[in-house]
Image (cartoon, rainbow, N blue to C red; front, side):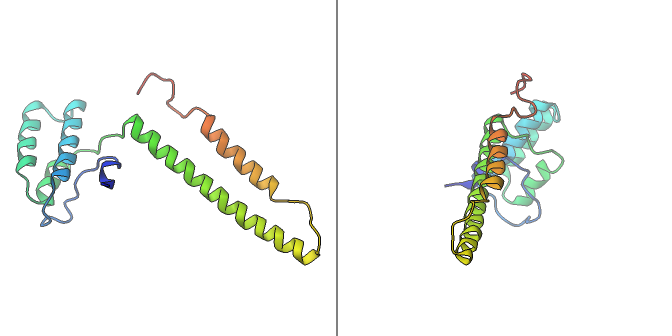
Length: 148
């Protein structure tokens, strides 16, 4: 699985100029150039010359010089949604870790006292879960403004 395809495009770093580039690297550079043309950062003639140079590029340094003065394109709505979902699921994994840790502390305390006591982790875990659910259902900034 190519992990680079799931990440937002970024300029090819000229930090390793002697490293030979792949077709995927050229595709990323072409995507950046196309976005720059669409945004008006490049005119058609400069875009065409940079595209030809990108197709001839052999090293990361060659590609890096073509995209160094251009910002990385903003992620699409679908890419941003995938990123947000991954972060939200990661928060639930942290919540699960908190559940295990707090339950262990509660269990050890119950063993020390020799009786089952009130399950105090329900309060912090409940608040934490409520925040995570609210994040999931609360509209994000920019939702519903007609920009997709």
